[in-house]
Length: 201
Image (cartoon, rainbow, N blue to C red):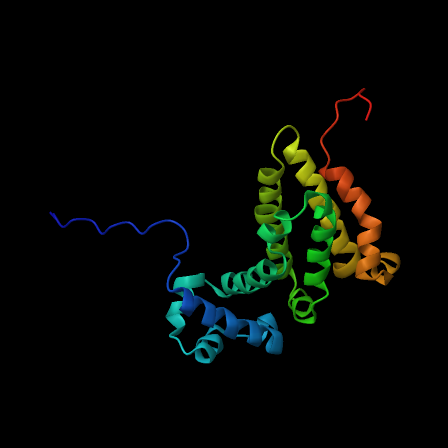
């Protein structure tokens, strides 16, 4: 009979690890994904460029897909800093939301990463839902916060799709400032308080 104590269970979730190591891996991976694309970039090449053991990539990110997700999330978080967008004047929040989205998607490196197929699309979906939508619900609060935040993210998602992912001629031809002018009224309406049916403004 084996009376040895069982090994302690590993904590759930991805380990955080050394922030500097994570940053060096993400930085190296970002450069290689841009140069070689998702499929032709190997974890061994990333480890070599970052100067780390390949096992550390599995430890920090789980897989190449997980690493690619972190590269995309890192660039999203840098450009679309939710705290900065939500922290300014409420009256100009629609403008800041549109500027953050267009600023991110007008970046050539980010656009190149988004051509990596389903992996990129999945990261974008997760960022919009888990980061932006969740934070907007918390920020708006009160009655109808989820519906209002959903309307905002739907507008921004439509902008991303029709201007960048599957461009339609008219939205794609607009400058970022024209895009802001066209969509600001819709975002302002979405951010406003939900009115009960039958009530007047």
